[in-house]
Length: 137
Image 1 (tube, helix red, strand yellow):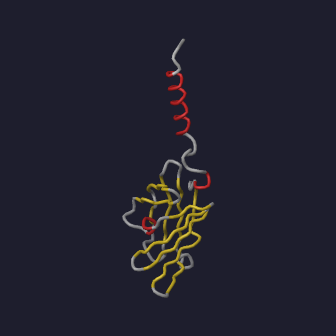
Image 2 (spheres, one colour; image 1 turned 90 degrees about the vertical axis):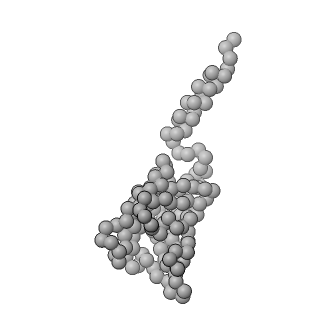
Image 3 (cartoon, helix red, strand yellow; image 1 turned 180 degrees about the horizontal axis):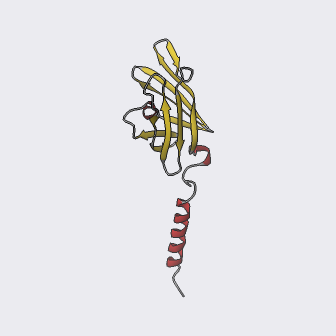
């Protein structure tokens, strides 16, 4: 009689290898934030003044890949003529997505985004104001 351990070990190794090629089995489908997003809300409030950054011409797109990387851009007509590259990584802790971009400093790095169906929503105190952002698929 052959011991079952080698067979079980091989089965476990194949299962783990197969899981690495599909969606992360540890992320419930309702909290899977992977996909392409664009800003559908982007406001900055300082005191009693609120500026709608999207109405001012700001655009933000970001894609969260299953391998934990990001790509995208942030463009402001008042800033550099070249959009800011949002290449980097993302992480999920519970229902909170955090971004880690290679660009030196950008607003999305300061916000912890809560995952909801087809949206990431968050706000943070940045540069003396409150930034509110919704990213929608």
